[in-house]
Amino acid sequence: MDLSGDRLISELYIFFGLCVLFLLGNLVIRLSNKDFPQFLFNCAVLSLLALFSASMLSSDLATTAMGMLSINPFSLFFVLILTIAMLLTGILAYEYAGRYGDFALMASFSMMGIYLVAFANSLISIFIGLELMVIPTVFIVLLSRRSLEAAAKLFIMSAISIGLLSFAIVTIYGASNSFALVHAQQSDLMLFAAALFVASLGFEASIFPFNVLIPDVYEGSPSYATAMLGGINKKVGFIVLMQVLILVFATFKSAFLAVAMLSVLTMFYGNIVAIMQRSFKRMLAYSSISQAGYMLIGIAAATSAGIAATMFQIFAHAFIFIGIFAIVAWLESRNRNEIDDLIGLNQESRLMAAAATLFMLSLIGLPFTTGFVGKFLLFLSAVNANLVWLAIIGVVNSVISIYYYARPIMAMYAVKAAAKKIKPEGAIVFVVLACLAITLLLGLYPQPMISMATNAANYLFSMA
Image 1 (tube, rainbow, N blue to C red):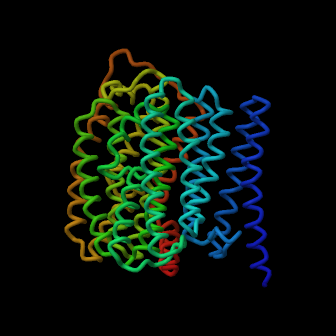
Image 2: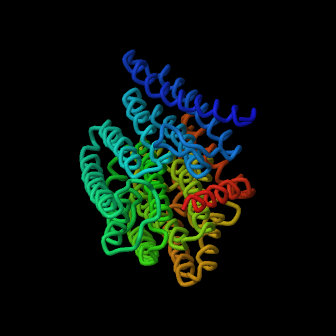
Image 3: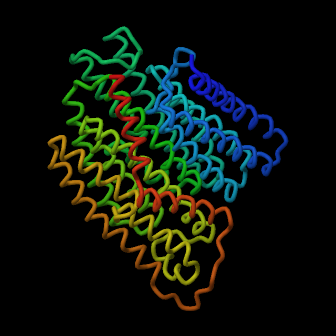
């Protein structure tokens, strides 16, 4: 093996060593019951994990480990994004979670589940990874006593999702005698398994009609937990959906047609119901549902360009969502939960008002933001896949979304009598500025991220 190959394998070993250190370190430090050392430890280890995943991604590493993990450009793309997302979410939790040590411990287990799903090369790996991600997340939501109902609803949805996923895996094994992510022969039994998979992952990815409890969970959870749910966990559902549909059910045209139909229903449901909301947090929850509908467009295209577009949109939405929920957390700490409570925000903090405006404009698809690039790639992939009607419906829904995003924007810039300047906490400013920089800089110059997404999507199709 050449020196560059030795270096990459060494980086891989270091990466997995850091994963073990991340988990065990949180267990040990939690016993000391000191939040600040644990916060510094998590920031350091997550930064190193992101650094090594970026290095391996840039080197096009493709190998297997322990016979059950596949390290490749597709998996490393999501490992990099979600590691950075968890780092930013952890900063929010340190500022607002009353029990940061408990959050950090649960998040470390959840992160290991996320890595296992991203690196999965079998249905069993996916199942174990999802379980390892979901169960700690329920406890994270439970850290706030006011979130008991939200945690119960999240647990119910997760239980149904895992039950359907288990049924789907058993059905595939019964039909093919294999748990591997390989092409399945078309049959009625396998078509039934595909339907079960889409339904089970619909709960994880907030796809209509499986998302009925999602707004309640997002609204009832602490904002840092909502940032994790929508910015990280939901994206893992899409990772699995892409892996399974492309690697196992690629020849099932009816499955991709069903995804296209679900995309339409999800976009309309999220956007129309969002119009009727008065709670800012709940409006953003329905907005997140509509964004899931856009992401499905690229999957429905069933092409490498479509998957790359979905991957870019996942990246874009993750940081927009975390950024805007950092602002929501700041507002929530001041008991400002309704859209009307945003009146005069620009007078109180120009940074928060400007950032929230740019995040929402990016969700609409304003040019020179990652939201615009993602939607443009998604609609283009649909047109190239002869799904012009789906692209048109996507554009129509983007126009609909302007109405409900305009309401909080106008409220923020309305004049409020006796408004006083409010200085946001340093942690919130850091998270907001980091997410804003990603949204704007990679919106102005998206080529590096597009190239990584395209390379990752091409690799996924090469495995099929």
